[in-house]
Length: 248
Ligand code: CAA
Image 1 (cartoon, rainbow, N blue to C red):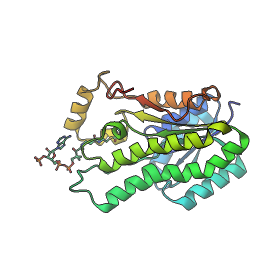
Image 2 (image 1 turned 135 degrees about the vertical axis):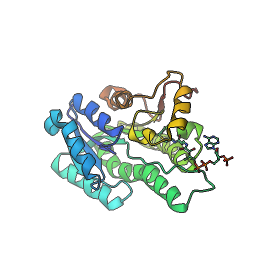
Image 3 (image 1 turned 120 degrees about the vertical axis):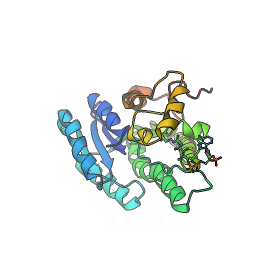
């Protein structure tokens, strides 16, 4: 069943792009869903994925907008079929210390990084349980495990992602649907490149592997969890962080 339909939110982003390619390489029909307003990036994305032909297609989506989510899931259902793999990779940062954080910086991060996962899972879970198969992979973050200076909003949302993951995993475990999260460390993406250089260099110096992660390394982990054969892994949080944070 390699031609299953996969939907990746944040699909044209730093991690999302590689996730789409990884899923398409293993035969999935991939919907890369992201903000329509990112027109320049959409054009660039189209040329990056040209070699995949029809296997990856772009669809507009705002994960914080429930109507946008509902209309996309309906459209994909009508045009392609049931979404079997959902990868929630849409996320933003609004870094600043709590003393300076305003309500909008808190709300935006929670609405997109955590609320977006509710919105999308809520819409796909019935189709997955009805067909007796589903793979949901939520992109969390090492900073949801450790906390990070300037990220009370982001760390709270990302820790919340894993709580959500475990709870939903229990609800659908008997229906052939797995729900897992991945906690990437600092990867070579525009989001991490936006961290001031001196701070970024300090962080890299404290990563045991000695470098940023590659988006393809996160994508491989998504591919592993999304596989039909990964049915006994559920409610897990897989760290992919170069040893930056270790726990058991
Ligand atoms: N640890 C301890 N103290 C720190 C600090 C740190 N990391 N950073 C700043 N401070 C201190 C400052 O020196 C300053 O001290 P004084 O008041 O004594 O001068 C005080 O804290 C306040 O500093 P700022 O006014 O600079 O704080 P700010 O509100 O402007 O925020 C910041 C600074 C923008 C958050 C900056 O520290 C920063 O960018 N940090 C990196 C955040 C980060 O790692 N984000 C990850 C983004 S990538 C991502 O999120 C992907 C993923 O999942 C891994």
